[in-house]
Length: 320
Figure 1: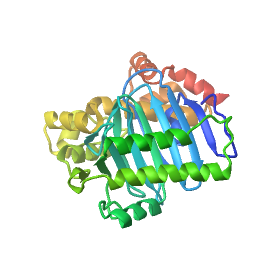
Figure 2: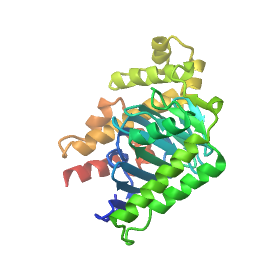
Figure 3: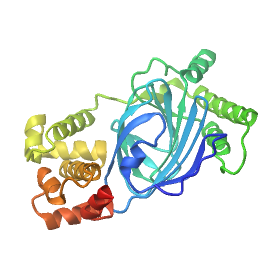
């Protein structure tokens, strides 16, 4: 990460840049996430963050598609908003810039950013949702156990975006407590107006029982449990009791990639984690062989394509 500064008065962290997904895992507010890079290339992630009381806001932009998996804040709701050019898939359901994603506390985040590669996330206390439901009787989010996607009135959504933009400001502008309270209130009011503008039939709970999504999740768990074993796509098909065509389509729908490529990416990420944590007490060859990469020249090429550096460079940093 480079270029990060902070304003202690308003807990604002602007312009943080990440070139490593492990660093990003620990930076996203109120969550415990794992990111998997789905397209080769040097990763570049910009992240602005502000935390005011119980409200946390992250504005992120990344240059490659990402698979995202993990648990969200167990005490607060998560709200996801995407820019006009972005497209994403969560729990096997496509989402675009016209919708809000609402995640109950502790909900699993499971999906990928497929185009546009930008996002805004709010982490808010349950009281905000409770108050909206009590005053409008139009939503039923408090009882939701899964991610909900909501089509929002465009004007209300634009007002919410503007309120968020006003609170995420340059760090050299002082923000006293009173000003911060007003800005937080503006965001809360804009979010409440957006949620209260929805029509009940247009709100849908994202299906956790979609056949393709369930199969892809089960296959991913199978991969992770046997990450050091020489499993093949055929093994996955047998274990999931589906055809190769069905499995390929399930992964394309749920994660935007093929099962064979996803397994290779998981193994590459595992090698990278081991190299970084080794303190130099291992070798690239040992870690590659342990993850089933038996052709070192091909492995080095795949690793460099995925992470923008040779595995030897990753290991060298672990030694210093």
